[in-house]
Length: 600
Image (cartoon, rainbow, N blue to C red):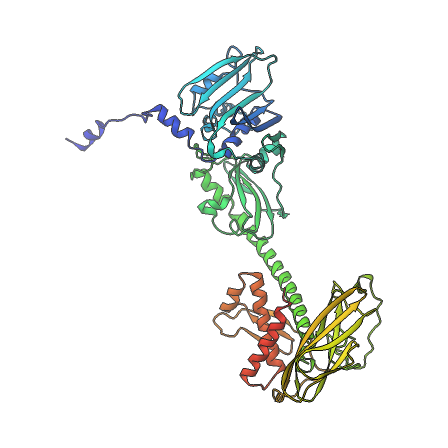
């Protein structure tokens, strides 16, 4: 038989549903989210021009129920003026709204004629009540799993305007669905529909005895203006995007005509990339021309309209990436400034506890202050180098700089090494809660809590410790009182007959010392150095392409500790030139220990 004849005799026909009821069951159970079903019921009220919608959650006669009432136009009437429940029940997948849209009516959301069936995912029975033009009240009842429906008249004293939808009993898995959850879901799901229609929605949770007003969700951050227009041949895309602090909770929702389709546009494969997935954006992308999957309306059909939608956002993505990169650079600069302040504060506190004569290079205190442990008159330079003998300009003290009540005390230095038979001074550092130095109405009492030696001037701010003739570990104790307030502090003194050797290189003088250096970044991928000190610029250069920096940069606290370690390394190398490697390591451990205590 010729091939053309066989082709002409091929059987042809149209697809048909073999089991109508099985198809209806599949459609009714296709909605996976009961909150989405509630949102569709509310949308029906908005489409019916309702001005007020009330959602009531409660329990009656032992059965949980959900009721949605509105003051809209109700169910379209038949030729007799009664609500056309028969059409609703017998024209599944043939929505009246589709025909109204075809006739030019705008602002309607539904189009598939299956929204009412989603009550199967909420409860067992649905009762829909609406008044007719004759003033009589009619109601339709449908049950889950039952192919039948019933329309009856309901005796009422007065016909109520609008529609009343009652679902009961609720399914066991959603009986704990709270009014607050319904409020939050609708605020996002119907955000623009609520804004544009002006409908007032409230949720009455009778079980929790709470009432919630559904307000359109407000986004945080900075609204981005002057984004490139996203236009296609089938319609324009509306963009309302906000630049926020990065976080995993930040998402951009995909909407169609004011109703949310996806909570996160990055769920779509084409948008699973920055800027949509970076956590820097909040807001909405509304494309009213997209075709949605009929069963759940939680997916987009990847047709030519979707392709046009993706292409229209190309320029927008580039503009957003530029905005995000600018914010990221500003964040890095701010984080670096904050990190430098944290490091400076930590090292200042550490050097209060460490022996002053061993850490002369760390010149980080303000002009005119006295380094704890030095004799009167031994003033130190500040962060900036200043010629000796230059008078310090007088400045009137601000109110907030005056010290408050005594809050804490410490001994400076808190640890040191003293040769046998020699002496050194220790100073009390009393502070208020804001860490201001307290100077008035104080009494001091020094004592040796453990070990040998003796103390001189035990009731003064500065006490002198005379080391015993034998090596020992000595603990000094200080008690500072101000009225009824008392604070205590301790210091540890290592008395030894052999000290670390002096540095081979001469120490820098006070006139040439630098302050605590800043730091900067330099990308040097593949190179092994982590940091180095630039003496000319007085900065520590950090290799931010080193694998250790990349690892530490995952968390702010880890990054801060890593840079602190680099500081300790560079400062010890600079301050103790010529020491043996093992002695440098000892100094680095010492400095890191006292710095970490104050690193925040």
